Amino acid sequence: MSPPCSFPSVSPASSSSSDPSQITQIQQQQNGHTLAGTLPTVDEIRAAVPKECFEKSLARSLFYLALDLTIIAVLYAVVPFVESKFGLFGLFIWYCVLGMYLSSLFCIGHDCGHGTFSNWEWVNDVFGHVAHAVIMVPYWPWQKSHRQHHQFTSHLDKDKGHPWVLEEHYENGGWLQRNFSKIPLSGLIRWNPIYTIAGLPDGSHFWPFSRLFSNNTERIKCAFSASLCVLSSWAIFVLLSHSPWAFFKYYYVPLMFQGYWMIIITYLQHQDEQIEVYEENSWAFVKGQLQTYDREYGLGIDHALHHITDGHVAHHFFFTRIPHYHLPEATRCIRKVLDKYPGTYKRKSNYDFLFQFLRMNIMLDCLVGRGSGLLKYRSTVRREERREKAE
Image 1: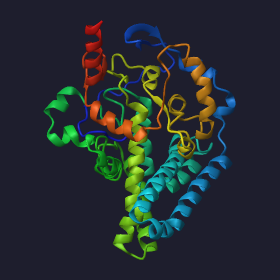
Image 2: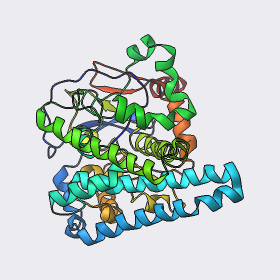
Image 3: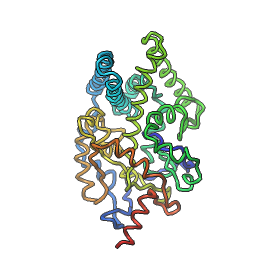
Image 4: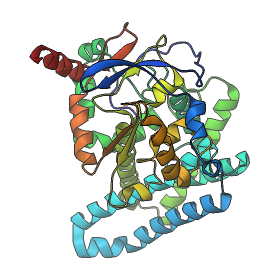
């Protein structure tokens, strides 16, 4: 799931997919030189993962849901003390911590959307709505757009949630289009309302007649999920004594911080100087999934966010089969396979995640290379050209 980093988007292509089990060819980057190589198959990667990692436990999933809700409740219980003793600074820290745990709650709904919360679809849908409605995320619409992201990761035209910006679109755009994502505070609104409500780039997740939906069943599901979000926010407004100021201060602002966390997390999962994006004729399932980064945030953040940060490669390969609590073990096993193919497994320590997010939003402005089958960020290509000249 990955919200927009800028306004421009590319036109959708056909919906055909490639066989994920095939051996694909890539141009691997190693020590600054292009090397031809082969990739493992999905079957080879799957064989390395113990069968226990594919087992779903409803009891365990409910425990993590209850844990997140309890922590959120405790944070709300202590906010009067925090605000009275530490003022605006304390409230800011509270927003940051609460935003992270609201993102943790999102990750539980994320498991539901993938079918890894339990073995029963109706159970997944019920608890998915429970987890997502209170944070203003329409469950079924998000499930659809996010599934398309997983099916076509790093595909130029089909990777939903990732508005890959081409050089010609970037240069022809206005000042706001070129620079909006470079503004640090833009992260507070890029998830909600820009991505989920306004629908840039995929279509509104709240409006049944947006371009995200193609039939009446999907539109009815959208109306249902969106209605639950509205009802949840109204219930919170009532609990806050019908006070618009309290609603804004203790509900909407935390959602803005939760959105900032979501933008940072999803951006860093699939953005880096070395990321490659593929056109239809060169894209393949394994190749696309390997344009995913595992990032270690440290300080307990990876655990709090249910390993969606440091176990994202494993999640991308088996997004409908491995629950979040099995991701660490699955990651260790998958890494043993990918280490045989130099340059395929991408992992970074990410203690400076906010700085890296802000830096890359400035540096990684647009993609170049359309028509070649493989696109890279313009800044990366220029750096490689300078290095080649120096050699």
